[in-house]
Image (cartoon, rainbow, N blue to C red; front, top):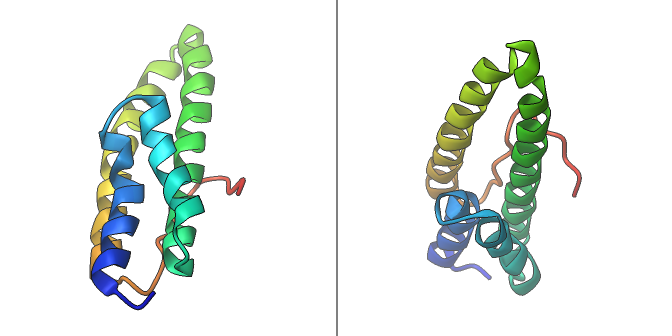
Length: 111
């Protein structure tokens, strides 16, 4: 697929899916795009978006458990800000550089 408009749209949709809804819709969109798309850049962006979602959920569970130690509340606030800002940065990157997949910093890559 050499259609840059479609590549931009699908890559931005993968990273922006976190803004749509709850757990199943937000992680389901990149999973569906991963299986449907044949473009390697779009697949890499979908994998990175899935990894980011998984990391957010793991960090939220860990930080929620740390609420009892007072440090959990600032960490949850920081996680909330990161979950809003990082996908926006990823969307801007994928729209400005459609040939290069975006890599989130400081996440575990499980896929």
